[in-house]
Each structure stands twice: as structure tokens, then as C-alpha cells.
Image 1 (spheres, rainbow, N blue to C red):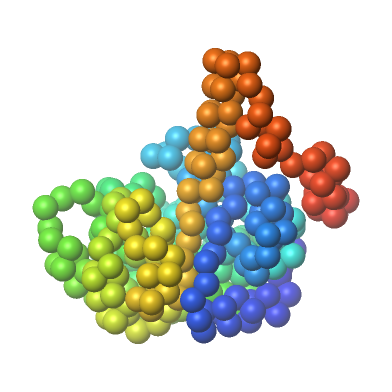
Image 2 (spheres, rainbow, N blue to C red; image 1 turned 135 degrees about the vertical axis):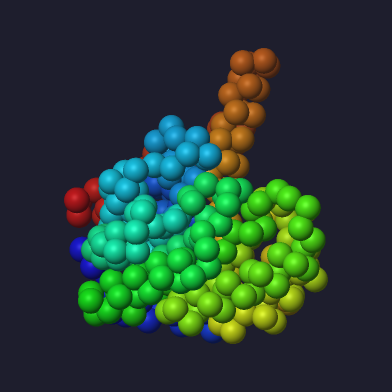
Length: 283
């Protein structure tokens, strides 16, 4: 179920200015995000894993990822970008095959990272990852679609003593190498908030649209826009916020016999039925 050509072009066009790209983790989260007015959504690999009971420091299988992405793309009316982690393959040829499969789900964009799939671990050699970006671009060309490829570099996820300015220079070098290999944009985030001045340096050093992730104690959404970021992901934050709300509400029931939080935020069943009906009937 490939996406129509207009969805690919619509997604590219979004990068002409700043936008927030919320990340879905299942069908109903995707439907709700669109219902709230977002023109496009992404998937969160951590959120997909949590939905399947998989810890965030472990990866779900390619088959599990494709099943969930297919359902999300079918449920969404607008463009969907996929967090492809490190490509779900050991070789560049394998990445090419996986990307072709992802295109068949209905996705219009991917992010491909240069870590081994678990943020915080060592990075692949830059030239090797550039080869994987080229493989992803070949896949798109064979499928004859303008897939938006974000080349992601994860040096800021490594907890070490390397100063931020040194990490930024390497991230810029890698990012521009990935652009030369066929990426359309660059995504850089970290295990802790990247300071605003470093974000500004990254934006200035990257030749194409720059994407990052909202983080605790980091710049505000308005500041990200001021710094020149084009695409801001919410990542697994909505997923974890949902679980945090559930924990707080259920603890209040347990400890105080008070269900008011549940009553306050529960979406009426009829409304949920309306949101899901089109997806369910299209399966």
C-alpha cells in the first residue's frame, strides 16, 4: 500500500519552515495526533517497542516494526515518517531491501542512524553509514518515489568526556557526508539536552533541513524555531506521558478511592469509535 505521490511532496514541503512532528506508537495514537491537527506524523521506535513490551534499550524485530508501521500508515491520512533505527540490517544491501519494504507500508520518509541501533553505543564509521544512506536512496529510486531520508548521527548520545563543541564539529562533518550520500536532512539529538548555542552551531553547519528532539531542560519549542531548526520531534515523550498519567491516576484510585483523574481525561467511547472506524473498515 504505497503512499500517493502527493504525500511525498507534501512532506518535503513541510521542511520549508519550522514544524513539530509528533511521534505515534500505535494506531490510536496516530489517529489522535492527526485529529489534533498535525499535517504529518512519525513513529517512535522506543514507543513501538513499549507498545509490544520491549524495553527501550532493546530493538523490536524488523517484522514487528513493519507490521506496526503498516497499521499506522493505513490509519493515517497524512504523510508518515518511520524511525528506522540503524536499518534493521547488517549490510548496506540489507538496508536497501528493508527500505523498499518500508516504502510498501505507505511511509514517505525514514530516519537512519549511525549507531548500532541502541543510542549510547559506538557509532559506525562515517563512510560506512554513508554507504547505508546511499543504499536507502537506491531503494527509493528503484521504487520511483522521492523518499525523504534523514541521516541521523548519534555522537551526542554517547556519555563521555568529549566537549560539546568537538562533538558538534564531528556531527556536522558526518551530517554533511550523509547529505552528499543522498540524505535530504540531518537529525541530531542526545541523551541529555543539547545547549541552545550548540544547536545553533549545528544548524549553521548543516547544509539542509535540521531536525532534533525535544528534551528535558533543553530549549523551548519557540527557541528551537528561533535557532533555525526545521523539524522538531516529540519522540517517546507522549508515549511516556501517557504511561505516567495512567500510573498517577491508578495510584490515586488505589490510595484514595478517587477516580476523578480518570473521569476528567477519559475520551468518550463514542468519540474513540468515530476516530477508529475508518481504519477498522479499511483493513
